[in-house]
Image (cartoon, rainbow, N blue to C red; front, side):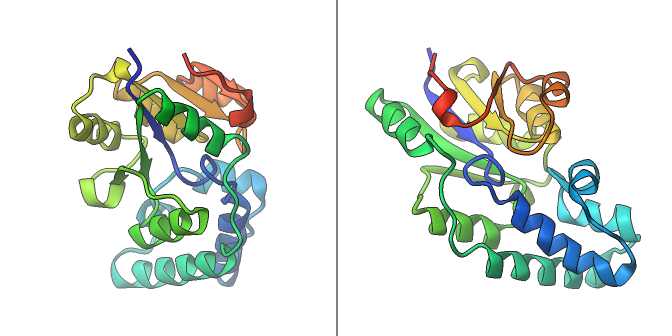
Length: 207
């Protein structure tokens, strides 16, 4: 029996990817790196910031953290007028009427996560931050932590993701996973393990 819905944050609860793309474009331009949509999806989307900066620039330590802080501050400047993904609030209302709990599982930094949730007017009963559990998506650990905190088995939850790394994380924890087509091609999301593809939550009927 389904008992919980678990959601990624960026690109799932709100279409924040265009804002992240712009913030990364500005942050990486001084290094001669041009960030277009294809580059963003291939090299940035769904990954942890330290991994992104190390991979693209070879930066670690304080130098990397300084760049990351500037990029995320710029993102929060841009993310002032967010709206929930179409159909999400209706889905949440239906879930709560059925007695389901819900939570957010994200690679986003803590300050960003609370900024986005606040902008959307959301206060999830459960928030799992990759930076606090020690490993981020695509590692299954964030979702395993979510299940443990809720006291649930994998088949008692349903996850919603929008990136291959997020899908791999949830599926790796044994959770059935639906993928939103907000940025990535359906084929790569299915290859990552997505059970179903949806454009928005308006396309969804809960099992």
